[in-house]
Image (cartoon, rainbow, N blue to C red; front, side):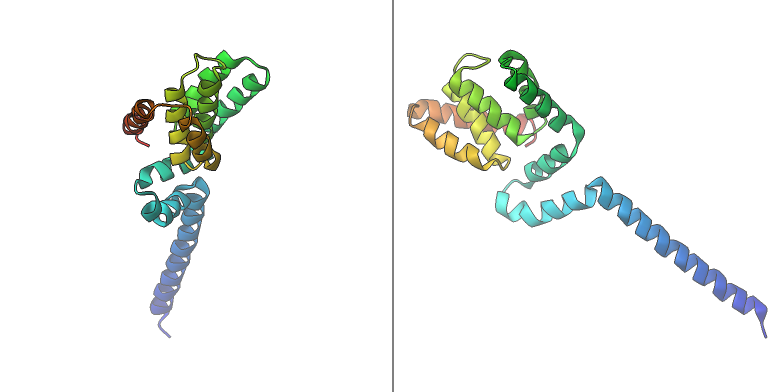
Length: 169
């Protein structure tokens, strides 16, 4: 019996098992980090959105601690009625592409809490929140349009487009 051939076959089998186990561990790590899922989200939603990088960024930011933690901090200040500090944290969260932060900023600008009342700013933030998947933002934006002139609506739309370009949404 040729032991060198058997040993070579055993080595190949061990190497094959190693690569399989390594591959499974690597895929598990990639899936756990959210990279694979972000790719899946991109693939599934790209045809629906027209601008899929915003979808993937929203997923990554929602999953990541920074956008969400800033939003939670802002919510805490909003509940304490410290609107100035809430606005600061909402703005930081919104700049990271966190949709609900844009929605809250829209509410703040629409009511004048924490800032000067500005229907144009409110509309812009509702528009961005809607773009980032916040369903109630679309309704809020349409309600707001009843209080605005055509020029104000157009200005808000232009500002939203510029904001998306500037922040890669």
